[in-house]
Length: 321
Image 1: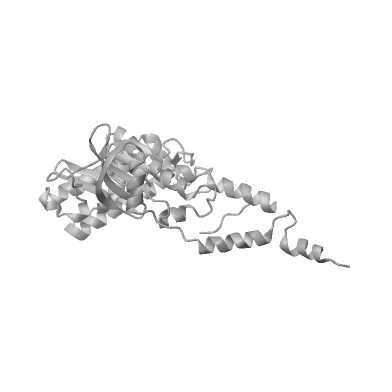
Image 2: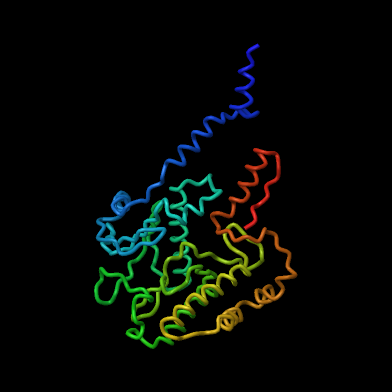
């Protein structure tokens, strides 16, 4: 008796009828297909295609997540800064691990959205940041902060200049700490990547930027919500931000503050109820798993749990980190 059909069912298909051969071919295709980074020319084309920009003048910066272009707005004629978030960066690829329900294109749009709305929240709270203008898919358009000498040249970064040409280094150091404190106390934001790499300097003062990773903290409870992180997590992030700017001034100008003392002074200005919360962290029951999840990605853990239950009828267990 020919039982080849049984072998085929047993070895090529799962009990649910999934074709293993097609899965193997799909894996082989993914291993051979290399994602390509978006080029500057493509970023310019993408920007002009929005019909909001008259012309793109030049590239003024770039990092691991975005290309920054100087452009002229069509309606007003103003010079603006266009931050085009790239699809296939290493950082975005890390964010995509276990997040198959979001495409690379969608992830770039999420990063641009975070940049725009964080700028919006900070600007409305009076924090010195570029004013956001437009959000176009994976592009965040904001005011262009120019140098005093040339309106087409961006203001210098704190790391690239001798700040003694702008004033007393000690006063500028205190100003950088004050800006961070205002973000935390007035806007209820944590920068998350605060350093001399993300501070512009002008005669009028410091301006912070690159806030796509910034997050709000929860002012009422210790529970992670869809839009905010817990206050104790925020304090940990604030401590890191203070230490980062501390290291920059210590290295370049031999200026130093005690990180814990600065942190305590900032926390002393919190409302009394938050101070009491922070003093009782060990006694407060946490209703989350204790991992840090920005607003957009807070739901991916639930997606994983549901997927595992559907496939294996077992409960999902998070990997140990």
